[in-house]
Image (cartoon, one colour):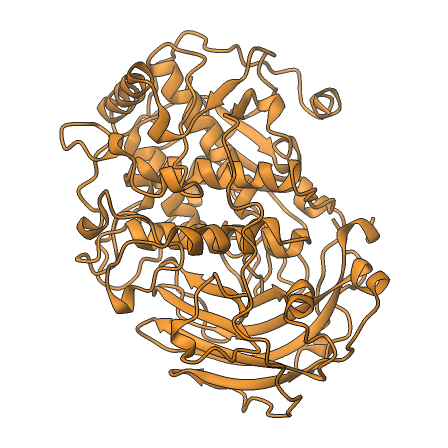
Length: 564
């Protein structure tokens, strides 16, 4: 695979760690819903014809050029052009946040080099943060100390690295020629995983170069293993460069992370089994790329299970005494906490596990593969990268330590064996979700054959309107008969999925985000596949402003391998 990818790059080269240059300010087929079907409760199939193929260039963190596309609410990008990075503006921050510029210092946008894979050497091995040797921990702390010591206008500096996330989660870049969405966004769509993989790649190389250790590897926060379900000790020393004061003081060790955390009910230590079941449901049990990564970059895009799982880690870690949960609890400030990068290192690892162990597949859509980002490397050189060149992490020169994954068989258990009657109680839409609400959703088909289920996944879809600048969480239960629905946990098979938003740029009031859930296996496990209707219970957990459910319906999504 590496050889084929290399052929797509230019002849520019990146030596492993060339001498530092001084920085100067002078210097797939994707499922889509047709517009005509937007208000139908029973959508038979989400698949429509493939759009035009096009290259997309996106500058990240103000570190390059942004994409431009003509607005089409149900296509990805069109007619992209490279824009001047100086077009970067102030971010769209939530109320109460201190106005900050998230753009980089002035750069020469004409001097861009296409990415070339690094020399093939023994891979950098990313290890769990709680298992680092004393020397590895010392190297990591020293690298961050040196990064913090760089001048703020150096694109490799800790400040500028943090601003990458701010700019592209909070609307710093306006896309010329578009009306909605007007900005590049790397959350709530299929750009989430590849953007953050590239982000960590360059961040890791910068750290390694600062301590002159090419084999330096960024550790990962191993919160999917019982031994790693707490903030690693290396981040808790107040004298260390890894310390951040803006964390939840009630969540320090030995408190375990709660991957189903409900901030409304207060701080309690997480449940190991519930955490493992949560990871199982969001990683091992997910089949389709659309469900795992999210959907294409459109106004009605949807986040995938990988992003949804990651969101709780942000909210759980951020400081609740800050109005916006800084640092980790808001995307504009998350990069200011060193634990952010280790959190995302584990997210990246879960992507690799999903592909390697659970036979997950990447998108093959050209719109996805040819999307481009710009980052500064360890020599302050502006590098253009493409999504297709990061789908296999091996040529990038890093891998992950082989540690146990105790969640791979953590299948939730059914609360009750009582099969509910197939009643008909459709929701009154739009539905303002300000209390526990139950209703039914009509299924276009029931009792499908194994062959039908193998070819098409049954999907429960919600069209959700909410304020993206606010933290929001609600849970979705199916055929719940276990008593108080607010007591349901990921250990229950009826617990289908959680919708979790971390504060980022506010959404337009007239747009929905799609929230989708694969349900074929859940219905089989609950032995309710013969029911005409889904019995749905929505449990709001927190959020200043209630969520509005504008539509709820069942559709069938052709599995990726049948769409090739």
